[in-house]
Image (tube, rainbow, N blue to C red; front, side, top):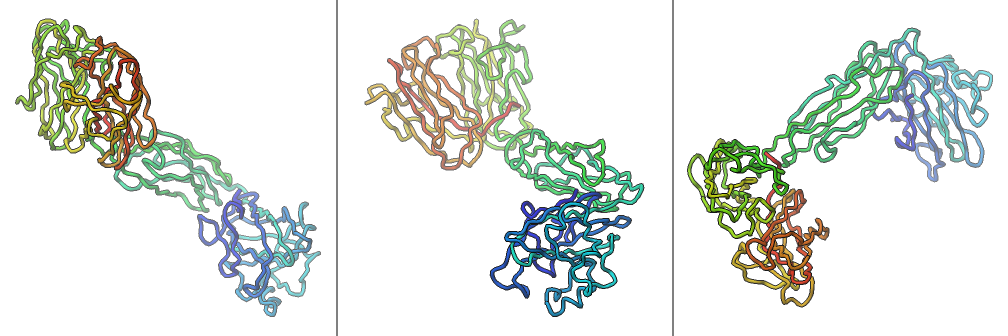
Length: 569
């Protein structure tokens, strides 16, 4: 059924020279075999226009070759205040423009197929408006083409108008298919295809095979997939209408190129609701693969995924990937982790996350293409002789020049029972590495406190503050994007304070300072970090740390570190 309803598709034209056409096929409404309902309304004009003060509706439709319209019924009719209306039909794309001139109407009406006053008497039953000889209101004005009984192949224009009061109406145009008509099937072709993320557009092609008789249609919808509509592509459902003889139809949609490293994503589409007797073929779904064109700005390498020499993989509940690498039970005391860097040539900051236990002084050496960049000894006093949460720490190596194809490695030497455990390596472009020292932020009740272990030798604390709560606020100065935020703070064992990071007035999640790090004081072993991943930041976003002290836990904060969101490499 190819229906037209003014409520959903807009008012039918009141311009006699420009009748309404189907939105997909300028020039005509498209009829499907069977019932085709046109629903509209007319409103009494308050000022004369187009030669009269009546509201009119004009629409044009097409009868395909070999098909006929064997009836037009008035299915519903209501006129406020009573009265009748006028319905006319002519072959061609429009009525003569002067047909609405009362003086010329009688002569022009001789070319009309139908010219009839209608009201509630024509509603219901089988009163065909194509055959009304017994009740014609204008017999002297009709020519030899009137009362056709059926409409053969061709284009026709209908004219409806009220004559006294506002009306609502619906016409049912019955299209009859020829005997043995073959409507065929519609399906996707191809049913699987891919396109680069930066291609700008993608095409969905439908084909009609096995028969092309009559006008038919099918609805094109999105079914699912991993890509997000309006973020990765722009899609809206459509009705695909194939005119008689038409075998292929292509829809073009926009792709939205972003800077996010997402991997390849998919969008799945489906065909539903076949119309006009056509079937849906076996390729009723199609999968589009959007090929990611973004290489990561930030590289996050889990140590267990790297090339290992001597090192063994070890499970650890506190490791970022649930695993790390260790010399424990290894065959030697020297080894390395390495990988080939595949990012753009640039200057980077490198963050090595590792464990520093108290049962030895092993060494780590970060190298590029075999040359040492920075080496250090695992000699922090974190009060743990095993791979516990308190033994995790990190090393920031600034200003490392890297090119695509460089070999990056950490070479290690074990000392006593210090297993030189490594968790992960992050490589961040130096110009996209943002660090905000807490003591430089706008403070509300927090006080600045010296501390030799803090990243800037100072931090903020609620010790000796005027109240139990405080804030530290700063503004993000980087480009809009999605970021991972690390909060550096202290978690002592003499209370359970709380911290919360707010971004643009919304909390990212409150947490308690309840780790068991074995010390009541702001020493090296009580410094910890919390990573909050996938935070959307705009240039100018406001970031606020909210702290609450408990007992002698002073909710101390050292810094905020912000890097573009990372994915595991």
